[in-house]
Amino acid sequence: MSNIEQTLSIIKPDAVERNLQEEIKIEFKNNGFEIINEKKIHISKEEAEKFYKVHESKPFYNDLCQYLSSGPIIVMKLQKENAVLENRKLMGATNPQDASDGTLRKKYGISIDKNSVHGSDSVENAKVELDFFFKD
Ligand code: UDP
Ligand code: MG
Image (tube, rainbow, N blue to C red; front, side, top):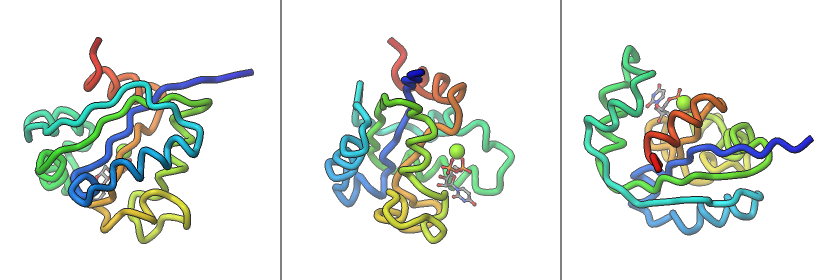
């Protein structure tokens, strides 16, 4: 049975800064993702704090929010069969040092904080995160 899902992907400031967005978008397309919607934005620290609220209690929360709001990002609505899990697989482990060969974080990530891409981690969170950026 088919299970088409949508998920949120973000190309983070470190990748946009290195002008990798077109290359990363090609990776998504080559892996069967359809980019349904996308925009380049520069969010405030307050917006980043809302987006990452789930990590509020973590020691890295402040730096994370500072970082996500430090420069332009590309937010994308991706669609594919099992898109949420498929995107997590394509991204690889949170720490680029632990990410498998061929994954986006292995290829492009610099460090655990500058790991180039974000992806929703569940179908439920994907809905919330897509709503956050693409309320239409
Ligand atoms: N992060 C960090 N230090 C850590 C753990 C996470 O800077 O020790 C950052 C990292 O950029 C990660 C983001 O916080 O992408 C969100 O963390 P999460 O555990 O949700 O990882 P992800 O879902 O992005 O793989
Ligand atoms: Mg996460």
